[in-house]
Length: 453
Length: 106
Image (cartoon, rainbow over all chains, first blue to last red; front, side, top):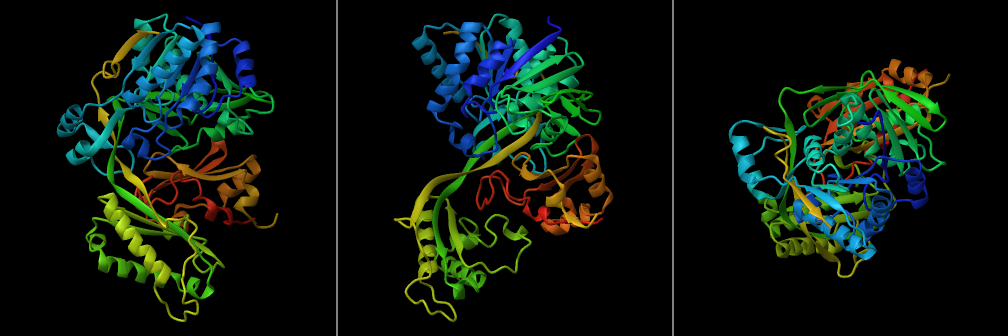
């Protein structure tokens, strides 16, 4: 057991590019572990629904080559969490394949542990029937249909599966996990060195984003953590962690600034203190972790809800722009008359009017501005790609040719950049499951597999 | 000190998803004087935020100041599903603009 741990995070997201000079500066300073997150729901449900990885294989190879060199040559343990983005088992295995190829190329050998987080549908159905599932945030109650329609289901693991894996395989070089609560590997490592939970959850929560908490936002960061506090320093000399930059980052992507719920409890930041150690490093202390009486994990699932076809173009005619809302209402009516699937709710037609309210929709407060030019994105979703194509084509033809009051430009209403003008863009997904489920054993729920490569 | 706007007095004004069903807004200040001035004013009340974003009380999940970070936080329920039909801001990163011109009194 160590009194102090140094943990390097090379980047907030595996595959986004590790700056080598700053990485090796951190490694040369002596670190106990490298931890990098690979997952996010932020790009939307398509990754989980279509089993897609967040970045290309080439991007993973580039970042992993650097990390594996430090792992092999300096003996520094590497943790990769939420492999591939959604963190499904298939992506854990794909990441292991990439590592195996790279290791073979370089003649490296690694002891590796994989932790899986795929959720069995029958298990979740049973939890639902026992009233052990609740929405995570302002979301509807879970239904059997949502479970059945999910293409993939994963659970965000806490620290327990990592601790179990490290206890079972104390000399492991690489830990690759499926979907994780981002700070979990940090928490596991620190828990094994008797560091306070309030300290390690707060630390993990900040540095899982790399040096995002620095000014300017950076990539490589080293956290030095001990029982009652932790210090942060970005590895790019041009970046600075200040009390305000770190405190500000703690709010990032969180519903509340003071309470951060996670697996097995909640982090209370009310008493957090941020003090400058130098002009570019900060010491943080004072947060408290409050364990919950019932252990709940977040389950994520995505379903395919239809297929989408789009058209895009611009309008420059001021006579049409001046009556655009009415015009698009009539386009909608005309398209609905041809395709009753729109009225019945089986299919959907959405207009995004850029230059007017394309970004904020009905929440746009500036409603009286008349732009000189607008961009129009037409989006059609339908149960089949063929139907989406047909409806989209019909709507686009109306936008191009439908007459309107006061029209002078009788040859066409719409400037279209793309040819063909409508383009099928494939399946549309949604997060059909985003719920908290009670589990009995937060370690055993997640299968662990050991490999030597 | 004359009246000013939030964009002139805040260091950070941003929006982002907090999970797929919420959008959260951070307004962060770089000194106590500016932070306390905004906190003391009634420029960022739940009522004003609900009006500005055209949401009901039920959709306004969090609206509070947080002294340790010299920050104001607002969290709204997403009125549409992230990354699905009709999405207009997958990351929720461009919903902050109406906050910028909020008047801050002396």
